[in-house]
Length: 123
Length: 109
Figure 1: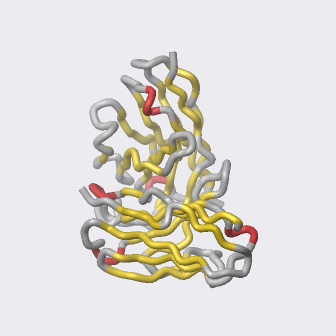
Figure 2: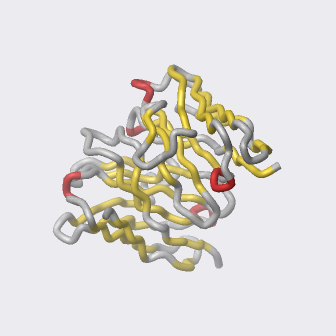
Figure 3: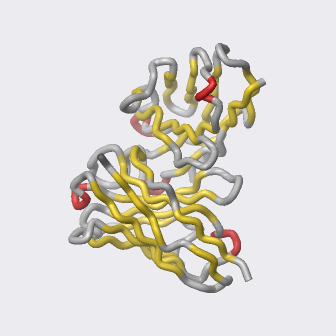
């Protein structure tokens, strides 16, 4: 059974940083690209970032480019999102997502989602 | 940048009725790389449809997707109580367009 468990969220002041983690199990982690998607309270879904299976290719939404860094450790079956220079509008639940299939690039639908970790940016 | 517009924003229907949700793209979606997700309060989204019309694993056949190019539709043939939720479309045709529509809330009338 595929399981994705996020952690690392919390309350942080504007301008602060956090490192979000996602622990994956139930599949060959190193074979899949992985993604982060966020959802602000009461709002819709927003794609944040993606990383290829090897970590050699990454992608970011324009809203987070230069402030967030995605990475992975395939030896630990772990995905990370370093979030920095945080703003109030970054307040959201951050989901770790595995696509449905292994593809070159990031063009696959999102089949498996974690339960999310809440990041609150406030003074 | 591609934009996905979902309509209506809210759909008020009774159990047993048919629901028709629309997702319109500002540019043609390559290879019909269009997915639909269902999200209930306090839960993560669930993949319903991908490739515009293929049901994901375990999705009941009352859910169907159709469309191509810029116009896509999710149809729920007969609403069950468990189907009242928010539905999102997503285009996944390129890494620069992994975007979601704004969502349609299907509520009980």
